[in-house]
Image 1 (spheres, rainbow, N blue to C red):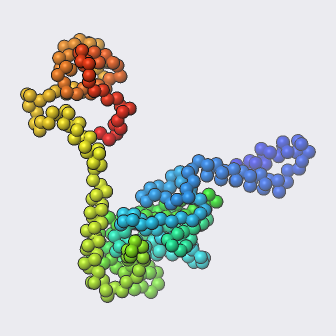
Image 2 (cartoon, one colour; image 1 turned 180 degrees about the horizontal axis):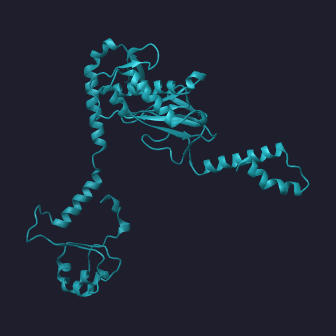
Image 3 (cartoon, helix red, strand yellow; image 1 turned 90 degrees about the horizontal axis):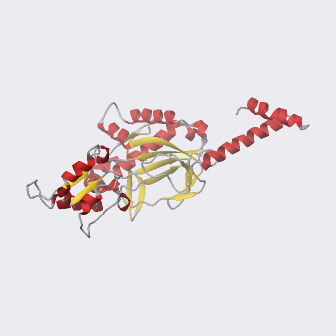
Length: 349
């Protein structure tokens, strides 16, 4: 509600009780409305003392103001870069873009997933303090334009390196905090599908006097360290970059392999349906899959004509809600297996 709407709603009732509706009272009611709206917004989201998951959206997530820490266990576990602007010029989109590009370049050379957090104060021992920034000073579109502008100045004209960075830098995400501020985050995912086995060098910074820079995340005894390496030593890294790319490729492939438990269930189901036969033969044990047969006018007659098939069938899938098929399946047998939808996770098939 606007201030005029609040006044129209409360003024008459307040003055009816002998009180005067003034400027201070109006501002007080406006403040109460704002606090209630903030509480409702936070209440409808899940409060997190942890960080947003890599590759996920900020839907129904609100950060608490607290310390956070994330350890890195592999190249696919994101390393986290915490940045909190201390000076006014660091609030500019160009500063945000330059830091994102530098971080992304280091992740590419380190073959490392990462998440850039703008609005979290860096602490010691890989910890960060969620503080947040005033959301009114930032817009997703403005930040995205700044990154695109920065990329154009880090590479002269269209080139494969620029395209690699564009694919690596994921969409910008605004994560709200409990105090009404936001943390601006960008996931970095250097997939093996488009990376090279050579050093990734950029002209940096995007604005001002530029130099060729080689940024890299280096894993030392379980710690991922950000380093700026002399470009002239890039040739010495050739073998290491090739090996780490092969390692990441194996990790990516293992992540997308089908679950063994699901594969085993499918194999068992296939074996029951085919009795182990590779090809369909006359000796193949039949199986029956029934749809909604009770919708047919002559359903009982049809089931009666093929009742012998139910006796010899290895397995019957009955997807009709009725139980009229059971008598044709049992046929006097004392033991047979019945599996209901509640007994298995049918989504796995």
